[in-house]
Length: 128
Figure 1 (cartoon, rainbow, N blue to C red):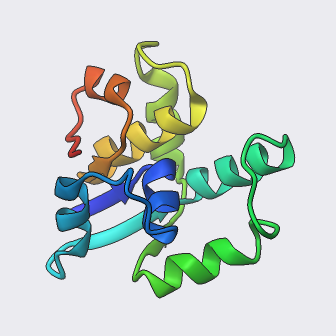
Figure 2: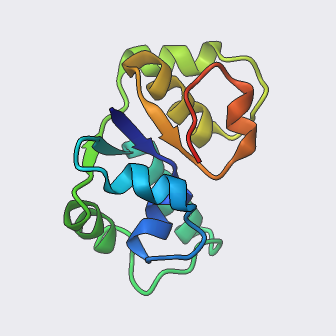
Figure 3: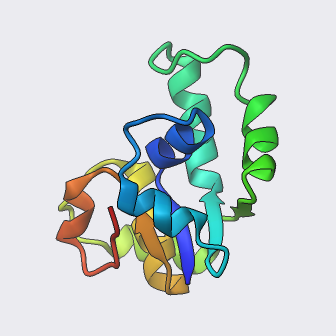
């Protein structure tokens, strides 16, 4: 199964947070699954850190790739079909980062691991 991590999910995995649900942790730890972090999530981390809304011990460009690789998570690029699909999604959820994750999951047949219940408004596989 291809798993696309939500931004919070990635941060909680990297920080070994108790906020991560047991079900999501089990799915993430299953070696049969492929784990991905969208470039849109990396962008979101950078934007929120720069705005002072996401305090980190260092600039995101240093720990994010290191934590992603150490956790066995592959980087997942934003491609043209996903950008076009995100623009076509109904406005059930207005966060542009989450909309891109939804589009990526739909276009590439992935399951999203987000703590955001609004994402479940779309016809996309969500596991939490």
